[in-house]
Image 1 (cartoon, helix red, strand yellow):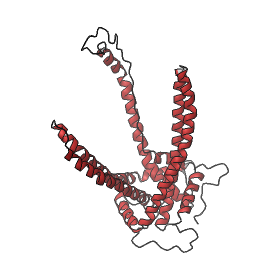
Image 2 (image 1 turned 60 degrees about the horizontal axis):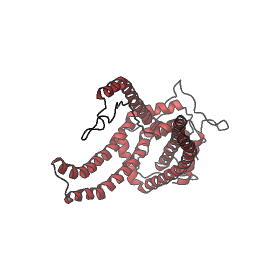
Image 3 (image 1 turned 90 degrees about the vertical axis):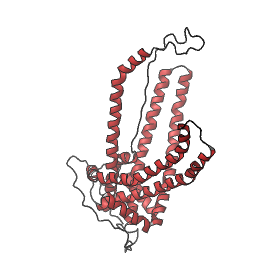
Image 4 (image 1 turned 135 degrees about the vertical axis):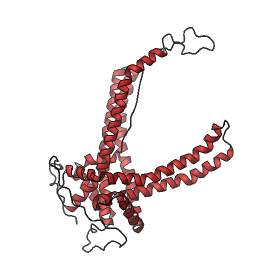
Length: 362
């Protein structure tokens, strides 16, 4: 398969066509959630006139607290609704970005001109098929996870609900579930994750629907199990190495900034302390998002380049006459490239870099 060349080609695409990092950011981050809250509690004369058996919160004014909550409730609802809308929009963009990245890398490998808008359009054109893959391949994992959780929780919950306590025999099915169910869940997640990588490219590069793409990916996986498993192991190793590398600047930045924060806290400069913490959070978030954008692009490119060789769309380096793929391995037919929209801008490259058209595939 030429795995070393696959890695080099994927990284070359990632670094040369940096506008793809926009897609990589959304494709690499599937969503986020955040929340928080606060309140101004008036405890009045807390603990005054308290005798034996009385609460330390005797001075708490419940009505004042409820009035304060009622005043900020509209703001809480608006913020919550805004976060929900942002989450939905981000999820929609992430689905389109996953497909758009596959399309973009394939166009580059084919030597065709590419715009960022055409990559987004290709992702949105196949949105429901890509979403269908997530449902078809994610549902078995979700169902099995529910079964595992139920088998662990029910032997403990049922006796408690009846007013008793779990017996020693209740831990037998729990241990059995942990020994069998958890490893089974992990293996199923890995296999379906591999099928999703292949099926996504069948959807984007052959125009298949979700069901047919899953079937073709399963046939391809069975036919070339060794190649797919090795590619997965390489990806795991690269992810571990990249995680270690990105952890170094995060730790250095955090320590370098948090030391002044500790000094400010010791000196009682709480405004400076809060400011340093905010700067720390923003810098860590910026580094994390930048890494996600680059690594999301590289990971997608890695699997797309692999898929092209895996299915015989691209010959091995130095092979003039590439052997055809096995007969039972589905070979995708290229879907026509959609024309770039009028509002699209060409993918930018570095000032000294070549034009957007990539060099022909060897």
